[in-house]
Image 1 (cartoon, rainbow, N blue to C red):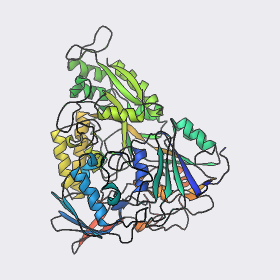
Image 2: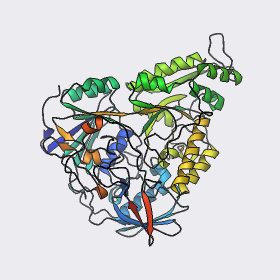
Image 3: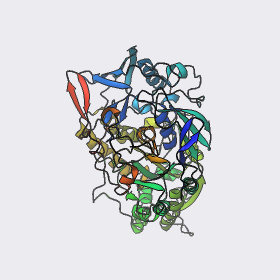
Image 4: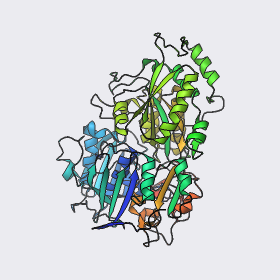
Length: 597
């Protein structure tokens, strides 16, 4: 049983305590890429536009309207008047211009989100309420720029743009970070200057636990109020606890194993110590054929997941892709063995295959220590690959150690995964040559170090393609190329399994309607956190206005985890873009609280 206490109260009011099991990689908005770091920063900084709570459609945020030139190369954003930073200073278009220019001019500042500005020609703020962005080519992501806008009066004084920020941080979101202790906690306070209005919660504390067992124990003992990434066993066990509300939702996340097919910096200089045998696509294809997604879904995720297909998670229906029947690699150890035989990888006397240099195929698989998925999936993968003559050594490491090792190219295989955005550009950019880091490990966010001209050419085409259907076709071709070249192996798409203390909180806004509380593409879940007795839970409708007369809380969502086609930024059938006298406006496909994703 969870102790029947209200939301934790400190001297300053109500506190939402969130248990997390991933270390924060950075709280620098130019650097952070992990789900926990970006989750916190989404609550600290606002964006030009935001994905709606209702259905992922694009809504105004710091930019209240925008227009584009007839050639689609110039975008003029009108910045909302009266917005203040958490320190009381005004937020203007000059802050947005500073943010984008810094990313354009400083390679380190482009580490997390540089792909969004790679085709920017210029950025200017002719006055406090006008931002003008000129692009080199038409850019399909201009209403989905997932870039936190930072205060110029703070960050212009920072001499090392890659360093950790000072606390308290100055932000424009519903909360701002006040304190941080590595591998312990991140504390945030409500932003009384927040332009949408202050939240009902006075503080949010993200408390780090080494594993989900510890986090669930903390929930049950009343030490935290909200947790996610539960294991199937934990989730099922909590169904019998009347004090706990559960949420089982389709996620926007994919889980993968990345293969080091030749780590290099963005100028092509080789780095790391990856096994050179993995440069052979035939070897990578055989590895992929020897991994069984169905078994992982059944045995590791307990059925709370979807089998692997394309690179874009199936939640994003306009972009989801699966190989055709004649191209699909079915799990088949015999076929994988035959493929390796044909590729010249002979078995030694000990059953381990030899590479082209006569060296045993011994590969390291980096795994996140205390991560249940990695711990449980690792032995399956090790066993399957042993059946085809590849020796795997599982190497457990901390989150930080894996991030550092993979950025340096010091791995053969590694467990990984990403939360995809409604607009697919960012997740697609992770596999481009340009997204490889510089010699200092900054300037880009590598995933697999994949560098392929065919893929890069397709990436450039999708970025400048404004026709939604044509763009979706290109994105699917990109996924087919990834599938064929195997820089990574998709393991599956895990559901979001979340739980919160009903005696402390009435509920949280979900994104989308039957979606998630944590790791949203926005800040709605934390902004709308509603302490017990203070309901209803907000429902943020068009332009973020609270339309709730009642609440579709996570308990309602728990009984049905399906989604009905996420609305994707400016993509076809999703957000309809209308050009009216040169003014580009958005029309939401769904408006009411009931018509939700």
